[in-house]
Length: 125
Image (cartoon, rainbow, N blue to C red; front, side, top):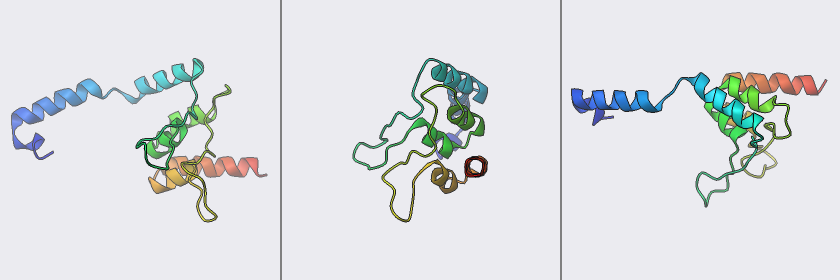
């Protein structure tokens, strides 16, 4: 950011590049909806860094991003590949369970946390 702020020319370049690559959230949501309808798996595992233990999935990633609309879309999808908020980033310990609730809390995504807490209450009645 120091370089961006070093001149008006760099600020203009940064602004143009940002506007080109960053689309409105609804555009991304439409793509995600199309992928789900096409059978993509919201629980497909991937590692950000190959030697790390953590295995992410789109559902866990969205819990960290905090987009409640996309999170609900994944978890409430009617297909067999619906998002599973109980997946864990790594094997749980006796103290911690690294699931979507943990990710939401860790990243300060309180809309996700609130949704998951309400969902747990609904299923445990």
